[in-house]
Amino acid sequence: MSVQLQIPGSEQPSRHGDSMPKPKPDQVIRHEIVFGRSERDLIEGALVAYQVNRIATPAVALLSDVSAMSIVLTALGSYLGFKYNIGTLAINSTQDLINDFQAQYEAYKQTPEYQSTRSAALSVKPLPGQSFTLGELIGVFFG
Image 1 (cartoon, rainbow, N blue to C red):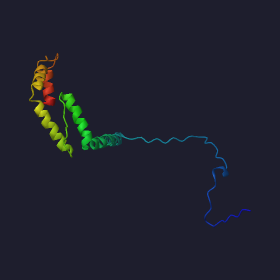
Image 2: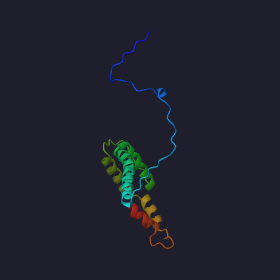
Image 3: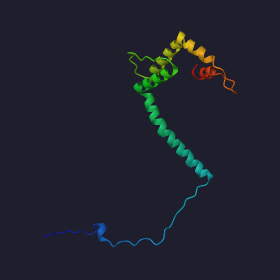
Image 4: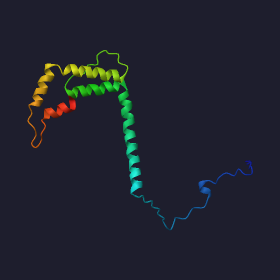
C-alpha cells in the first residue's frame, strides 16, 4: 500500500520518459554575428592580453620563488660559461640571489679563462654583409 501526499503548488516536473517525444526539426535556422574591423581589433587585443596573462602569471610566480630562481640562474651561468655556486648561502629573497649571481659573474669576468674566451670570440671574422663581429654581438648582449 502506497500513499502519496500532494501539496498544491509543488508539482514535480515530469520525468524524461513521461512526456511525448519531440518531433525532429524540419528546418535549421542559422544565426550569424558579423563583427566590423574595430570590434575584431578589440577582441584581438583582449585575446592577446588574456594569453600574456596566462603566460606571465606562472612565470612571475616561478621567478619570485628562490629555489626556482636559483635553477634559472645556474642554467644562465652555465650558458655564459661559468659555474654559479650557490654554496651554503642562506638566501631568503630572489633579489639577494640575483645580487650574488651578479657578483660572481663580475668576478668571473676578471679571470684569465674569461679573458681568453673573450679574445677568441673577438677574433671571429664578420659575417658576409655584416658590420659586426660575433664577439661584438656577444659583448652587446652579455657585456
